[in-house]
Amino acid sequence: MSVFLFKRLITLIATLVGASIVVFLVLEILPGNAAQILMGPDASPEAVQALATKLGIDQPAMQRYWHWISGMMVGDLGLSYAYTTPVGELVLERMTVTVPLALMAMALTSVLALVAGIYAAARHNKLGDVGVMGLSQVGIAIPNFWFAILLILLFSVHLKWFSAGGFPGWDEGFLQCIKALLLPAISLAVVQSAILARITRSAVLEVLREDFVRTARAKGVSQRSTLWGHVLRNAMIPVITVMGLQFAELLAGTIVVESVFYLPGLGRLIFQSISNRDLIVVRNCVMLLAAMVVIVNFVVDVLYAVIDPRVKASDI
Image (tube, rainbow, N blue to C red; front, side, top):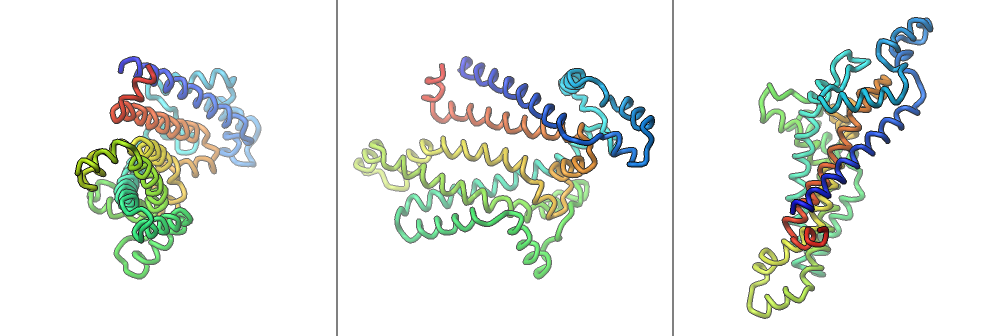
């Protein structure tokens, strides 16, 4: 197990280094000058150059890259150009909205998808299977921002059960915050659960055709006991893979839904920072999201070895 983890850790570190280089280079080739945008179009060249020197954006690219990486290693993400606030504080403030939203959406996705996928597989080619697959196809086809607007029209405008947008802040009460995040989480979970339900169904059906399942049934084990005791664990590897990717996607892809519900999350911070040419915020936020994706994939790899020891053995 130690060899398996060591190899995965080396891969994780190498991927993070590669991602940091790509993020830095991509943002370096973007047109525009942050100092010019902050000073305005009528600012003198001397004033723009003075601000660029103060912000450190006139330094060589290699020096700025090393300064950025070394700062991240000690928790110093720099100072926002537009907000004149430490980037770490901005990110932490917005993460208190984005992470709970992604966790709620992932929890809803997992429950809906696993129940629907297992139900459909247990009733293969029957009415229940056809109904679940039909609904999942509709769910995949619906854009989450459009579904979010429908939820606002129904539950906020007509029924008036929920607020149409905004976030009260965690100091206003836990239940109030969960209520504010519920509709955004549902709008995100609909598409993700539709995809995961189809994958769960396929994985369960594949395991149901294995010899050990037929042997268990021949020994008199009930279908329910076989399904939950033997089939589900073996079918979870591809399902966990997709769940890990979906959670990473939920963390990185909430910008549209956050804009629809006017949530002060990480996605809206990135969007606003791009508009302000606040590249230091964009760079750190994108790197943070990339790191989350890599770490989630690392956790998924470790779960592989826990669920199926053959994965660990084949990698040693």
